[in-house]
Amino acid sequence: MMISTSMFALAYALDWLLGDPSWLPHPVRWMGWTIRLGESVLRRFVHKPRAEFVAGLLLTVSVIGIFGVGSWLVLHWLQGSNPIFAFSISIFLAASTLATRSLLDEAQAVLRLLLNDDLVSARSQVARIVGRDTEHLSEAEVTRAAIETLAESASDGIVAPLFYLAVGGIPAALAYKAANTLDSMIGHRGEPYEFFGKCAARVDDAASFIPARITALLLVCAAWTLHLDWRAAWKIMRRDGAKHKSPNAGYPESAMAGALRVQLGGMNFYNGEPHDGRHLGDRLLPLEPQALGSALRMTAAVSILMFAFCLSVRLLVLR
Image 1 (tube, rainbow, N blue to C red):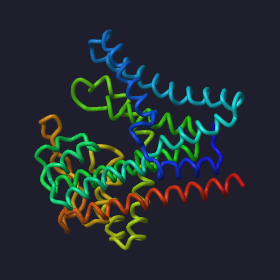
Image 2: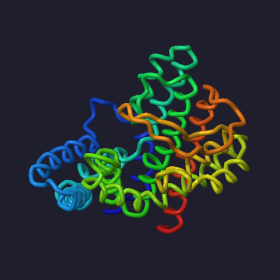
Image 3: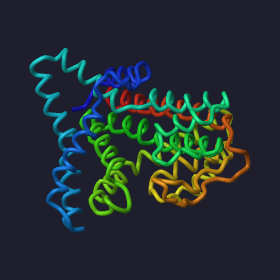
Image 4: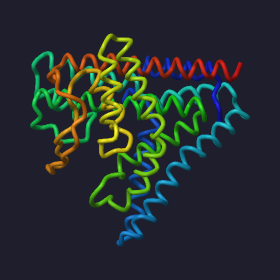
């Protein structure tokens, strides 16, 4: 179900206005509940790797189908029975796939705490937006974690949803969010998800392939707009983009590292276990709060640039 250009613009504005307040029902929370329920049921019947893979495949297809095809059916029915209500629900669902305001708010809170020299609270705050252990991070590591999340989430939470909203409407955007949520919950290496989450991880990799590279290019453009080092952003993106363990995350992260002239990547701990990653960028400047401030401005610029691009294309194509 394609949305009109005016609905596309209203949804984007609503995301900037409201973000994701905890009191508002959110489809991603429904996705999380559905995934947890599906996993708890399927786990009872699988005990071998092949069976785990098949169960994970079934869960992945089911969740994406429920929110992709399901939203199309619901909106189609509402459009025929109550067009005004259908319009309101469409705006809400479209806005719920976007995360510009919430991402910037969470990272801005980390920056404020760092600037106030409250490292303990900054560790707790950054733990809200990263999966790694944060209890013993230094100020530089907290800054790195926040910058890396801004770069990766600029793709997953802003550019990709705008891309799928523009080309496939609300069902496509919700299907993408379902794939992304599946990946974040079960698409991990190692036990207990090595086989169960393999399909979810691959689907998310495929769905994020184009948006991640668009995000990297937009970060180069944002660096130029904000008078940061856009040449280094382009250079480091081309040099280090493929070094990341993820086939997608390395491109926006390396572009961000180049623009800020800092080095991202390296050692992280998850549940106490060390995970050593490749370094992205050159350590020309220290990882200080000022770098996080620049990363916040770049992320906001990427959001605006992607919206403007999608809006322009829609106006040209649909006129």
